[in-house]
Image (tube, rainbow, N blue to C red; front, side, top):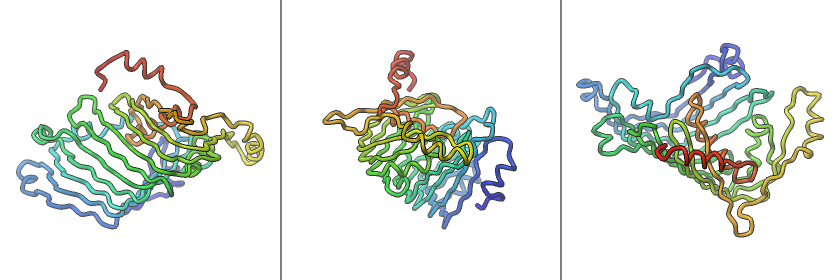
Length: 312
């Protein structure tokens, strides 16, 4: 799918934030589509769909106003709201590449993140009551690489019949040079990782339409982060670098410290106008912040636990 406009020209055609995307596939294969069932009762029933060598690029300019009342449904709610019955045993993604770039609200250059060598399965995609009675869980498993070196594994279980659309996510990120994250962080968060190695990052949280709560075990060493001044124009660039080290803030440089492993608390309240991928990222970020000692959300978690026992 080739866009009509390139990234720069696309922004001249819109008044509010909107995703630009470009996608291509080597091949798509649909296996065992039950046409008789579709003709008889309009049910779409497919055994398997394979996307081979998906290449997807997305971009967003957050300097534009946000659209109003643009609610993004979680996958379960999307299935519930379909006007027809759907049953797909599995969707396979083979050797995919996905990238995203964006301008921050005050950015002059876009930040950039990409995932490569993605292989994944999404299983039990259905909204049929009989099928849900037998298996009410839709599962997504994926492996790949974050930037050049960050090999990851992710699994997400979606409770298809849950009234608040609960899902459970676990993920693991292997050894990675954390300075690779600067491609995103320097232009969107105005911070720079000067040094640091991720040795292992284990993530686990539960989430629904409103909240995400869980834990992160972030094993790292030699971490040093610095705050960058936002660059208003070219003349201020040198001044920004001169004050760079003066703005370095203190974080815990390693984890574990001696034999003590510091766990990061994950807590995030969902913005329902953002996608599930944003929800995942912000939830994980909350765990990173508490793991490195740059913040705490224990108060919010305590209030969450006290206020209601049936949020999940």
